[in-house]
Length: 236
Image (cartoon, one colour):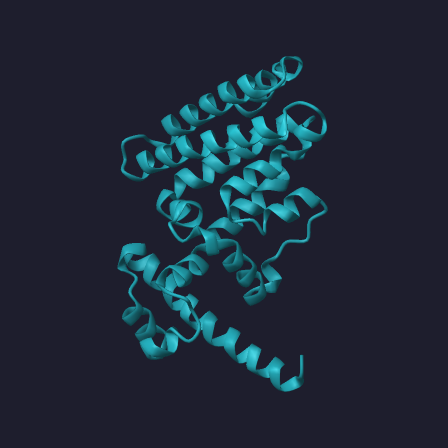
């Protein structure tokens, strides 16, 4: 990249951050539903037309503005798995961690992982760390490092199960089916929390119950006891 191109990129990133900061302020004041192109542009000191030079659409902008919440979740993962003894322990511990963060901000996690435009979200996630390179955490775990750049929840969940597949605990096809089913009821429970049908504690208990029962069904018999042990660890 030439010096001129670097200057242009720096300018582009600086303006994008202005728009993102303006969006964060509006979300804090009125919630996601209060964000409009015109409001963000006015808050940032630019025209609506300028905003469209930098973002695909409003969803793109709102996604980047809410990545800070995903950061908090990502930051908590290394600690939540530091005492895990096996891949099942890791998987269930991360499930528990996910429920804690997602049920605190259900509308945001619904956007981050279950939006209709989620096919673009891994691209947006990588773009976020280009805009804010200092926010990318230095961690030793290759598994978590890869996870942080995945914003498709199916891919995240399946990648967590790869060690289980490699150790012969579950077949690949079974892991794919398990992941697909889990994400479907995960979405429903998240919507119930968002709509105040379930509180956080009820939703967490229900989700972990379903995850553990289904995982035991798909695991090979010799490894099913590890789910019970993991559940004891995460509910202490």
